[in-house]
Image 1 (tube, rainbow, N blue to C red):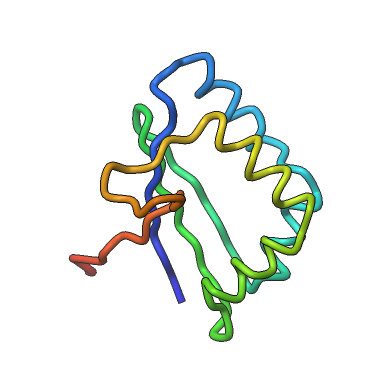
Image 2: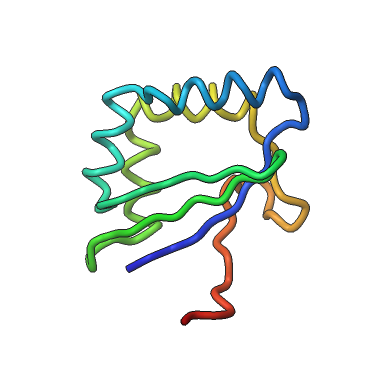
Length: 108
């Protein structure tokens, strides 16, 4: 399966640069948690302060399962708390929601 999600960053060039540096070498525990959750490929793109995350997963992947795994992993929680310093929810996000699943509207 392939998913596309969106999220904003704080509109501050220094914070955006820091955020990108963290993603140049994500913590090994975070990389492993992504694979363990059933994600086989992940890419993040940025335009201005908007992020787009492309994620390919196994057939068994579920957002609920991955969320439960992340909630039980202290290192993932540490990472998410740190990243929230740089991130800003989309205006349409639910309270507490970070990444918002995008609707696919075209395929060639």
